[in-house]
Length: 283
Image (cartoon, rainbow, N blue to C red):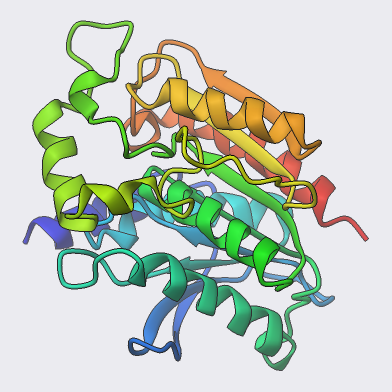
């Protein structure tokens, strides 16, 4: 019931961006993945493709919560936006989700033309845990000499699970992400603390010192009051050092997941993302 209500509410938000959606299944090594396909009306030429990963602490399968951003990005960019219903913990713990996410992106690169998409103009992005997955996908593509990604968009992502949420600081007394939430999510996703230093989990952690020269360019967006702000900024600084940071932005007066309930800020941030996607995928 809660999930159904969430989906109804998400589909009512930002009504000015009316983009049709249909589903398809993408095969992966741990089973087929349902993907929502948002294709703008009246797109004559083969559109670019943006692959989106939703949030939920790597635990909650709340794909529908990203319906507003998917519709908005599709409408503002003319791209096809794919919303991926990826496997979540605790049934599918790390490293399954990032590898599955990468398999989906590889499938898009290999088969997009069969659906009328120009997957040579391919971008990835996500909110919260989805932003963490987008960063992992970009890392795997970089290491694997995989699909060329024109941009990775990391929106208030968790990028350092080596530090518990209880030790992360916010500018407000009661931030959205509470210590118990971090404990539940992190334990479900990566129960062995040693694995939390892996570069696909914590690219902003102290253990990841690899040379990232050549990784996909990135837009990193943090919320001012979010306990994850500092690690987003830290990763942005790291990417800047390798010439891979396009822009780092903090949303003032906002906390984690602000865009789920704040339509005004959501519109501004989604337009900002769309601007970068258009530039990155311009012919």
